[in-house]
Image 1 (cartoon, helix red, strand yellow):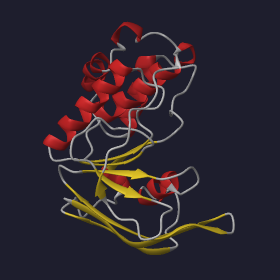
Image 2 (cartoon, rainbow, N blue to C red; image 1 turned 90 degrees about the vertical axis):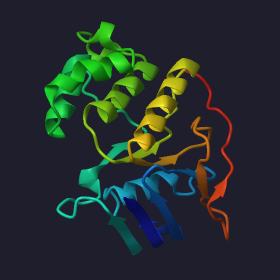
Image 3 (cartoon, rainbow, N blue to C red; image 1 turned 135 degrees about the vertical axis):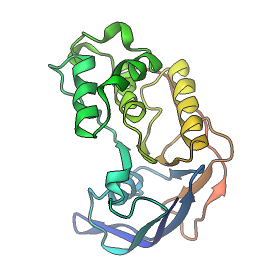
Image 4 (cartoon, rainbow, N blue to C red; image 1 turned 60 degrees about the horizontal axis):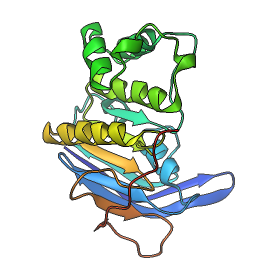
Length: 216
């Protein structure tokens, strides 16, 4: 499987967020999208998943299911954790597994993997920021999809949870998945390619940035 972009442009609010962005990432690979605030990292991920219209350029997916769109084969983990506060931890994940067509039997193993099994009956409103992030990550594990689009995935996670997420990402890559992640810090994965936005003539390079700060 290979996800490719050619000369992508994004226009929002009457301005060019980015133009001329090209990249290619294949199964078993991770692409880190870096750059200053406002460079368009989040907008690029949202463009790939179809939440923002492609102004110019092309997105293609080779080797995926031809009957499905890129969005239907991708998980998008945004800045805001998509949780309903009044639902319990288990109910939130049960909603997402049902919506994404996964088996309910995957709920408990996913919650155990992210360390939230003791809190399955707790309403999401009472979770810390790091716990909410871990519940969102459980969705990636409970419903298998080959493409992970992650926006600051390490944000709000403490060091232990960051290491656990890095292990999940490595396993996903080993199983043939691919990852595109917007980040200001390290993803904890070796041989991460980098695409830096906002710099003229920027190109993918092997240059992982530093670790993010801990859980808040």
